[in-house]
View 1: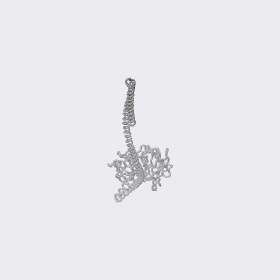
View 2: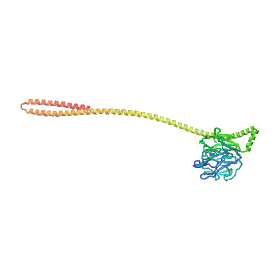
View 3: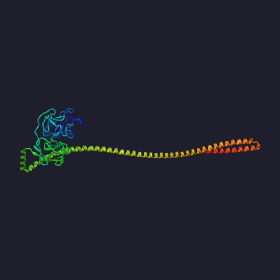
View 4: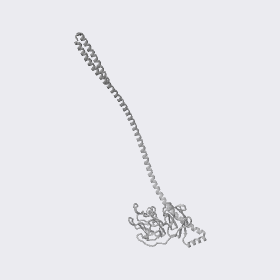
Length: 442
């Protein structure tokens, strides 16, 4: 027999949906003589019918990841309710949820279930059936109880008895609807659950924030309880004792102790071994889950390491590319600086040439002014020469017309004057030519 049987695999991306955690890891269970009890979801709205086998021990139902039956809805508490199977008996305990758990139309806090009962949580309805009755409802249990014949008492540090039960489960937490209510800020609303098993009693941590400690050791999920156990929740320490249920059992135990202390010690050791065996099984299961989780994390870390290595290689390539770009930028900057210096030198040369040309222009302007002045002086000399020539001509005419001067005297005087006039004209022309040649050369 397989301990989990599910006929529906719902989509995980719906806003509200039903999810069986056991679909992820289906573990074969050893064959037993117990009938297989199923929780059958009728299917309402977008849900389709499906079923899950109720295994021995604890089954959590809620909206939080880690619950065996996960109901994705804001109207379902993180840990909504718990179902405990002991042999053929089923116990349901509401875990102080806000919306409550409905059994057969009535709100239930702690109740023993029978085949044919209906459980409603928000919009989901489950029928309690046995193998071969998943499609129809039936009533009554299929076998008698096999729960250990003991009662459980819980006391505080002052040995004040807080709660006692011999039937069903016991809820410990900060909520007022818990069987044992703790005034402890480090305790969760529904913190831990004590419940019976085939071999004794166990305690389960309900995925609390600060954990549950038994004998100063933090439990992983479920741990068996010894005849006397010390548990710590938050800052509160509690004593849990497993006591014989009837006076006859008390008398038989006392007689065994009186007749044979060794037999009594053997019985206590046998009971302790049973509890240790249950605890070892739970620890083995917890270790197996932790090993699987470690393997998954190791695989994820290996993938992350590969991604980191790829990222490192890409980073090194990027660094080399940046170095090359930096070297190219430095060379380009040096070329630009050299070009800038060359341009600056050219600009300085151009400035000096402009200054030199300006000086030359000023000097030429000055020489042009001197030439203009000398030209004006030559023109003035020519004008004076013309005036002198005119005066000489007039004088010559006067001399020619004078009766006291003979012809030879007049001819000599005229030639002399003519030679003097030609000499002065030639001198003036040479000076003008020299001036023009000097200005042109400059």
